[in-house]
Figure 1 (cartoon, rainbow, N blue to C red):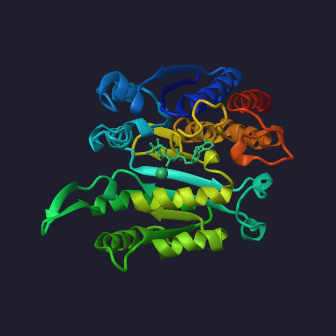
Figure 2 (cartoon, rainbow, N blue to C red):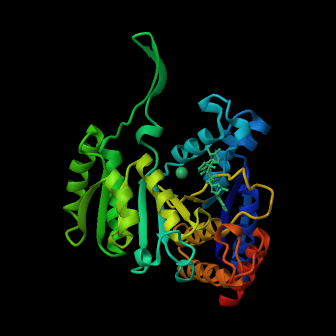
Figure 3 (spheres, protein in one colour):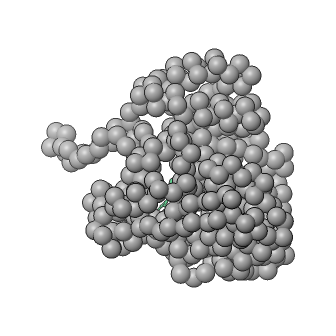
Length: 360
Ligand code: NAI
Ligand code: MG
């Protein structure tokens, strides 16, 4: 019998609401297929700061390591804004990625046909379809570089260093090319090689990796142009390979093509099978506790978990199908459309849990 060990890190804000729905769906899949599901729970982010004084304790890291996969909600909230950087909830998020060696962040962005009306972009821009995979480097670059405050000529100043080693670039580039081989065979490497030394290093290494993938087309694009091209003609992209910060920004931008930030999942992986799965959005404190957060990004993250960590492709597809069906059943306000009934977070989650059992 298949045993799925999953550690749930619900986190802050809407985190507990959306992970609860994702767990409903996961339980439904396991019930339908007679898989054993072993769930553990851990603290991360603001709730960990409140309970333990730090955003990520060694106990939480151990729970994650003992699992086959981790499902994370989101962390953060305005009440933590005055904390020093190393005690902020987001520090817990950066730390868990490094501690688990999760250097590759995969963020697929697709337009569900029925949501074409919801995308703020005119239909003609997304009518050719859009199916992009952002492959974002996750444990290097400016978020992890040396940072500090100083004085320059008596003027209060601050700095953040963007640093990459060839090794870091090589391993993420391989992930992008491997992914492209299973998709439409195109990698667009996004950088700022006209001004950044680190981007020049990226290009040297990516060129080298590309030589092993002669059937994958490689092109480079400056990040400012890429931001514009995503709005102008998103169907030109297949795999977007980026350093950490550029990928963070471009994937939020790409989410709007899909209709809402509330529907985009992500997977963070490393060299092993342990993966961390989470929506790309944050803790959405403005809507927390109201029962209106969109659970689809987290539920689709469960699909990615079943696909990548547990190699259950059929089950992953069934969740993706049930999510698409839910768009006809009803929607949270971020996807509001008068043609479809308004539903709560929990109503959508329950619908998908039931639907997935029918499909399986
Ligand atoms: P956010 O992604 O939490 O929210 C941005 C906007 O999108 C808000 O209007 C929010 O209501 C909406 N939104 C987000 N998720 C939604 C969902 N599932 N359904 C419907 N609407 C949704 O980003 P924001 O406001 O910049 O950050 C809030 C907090 O989250 C901050 O403390 C930030 O540091 C943290 N954060 C955490 C992340 C994580 O845990 N991975 C990622 C990004 C931000
Ligand atoms: Mg982000």
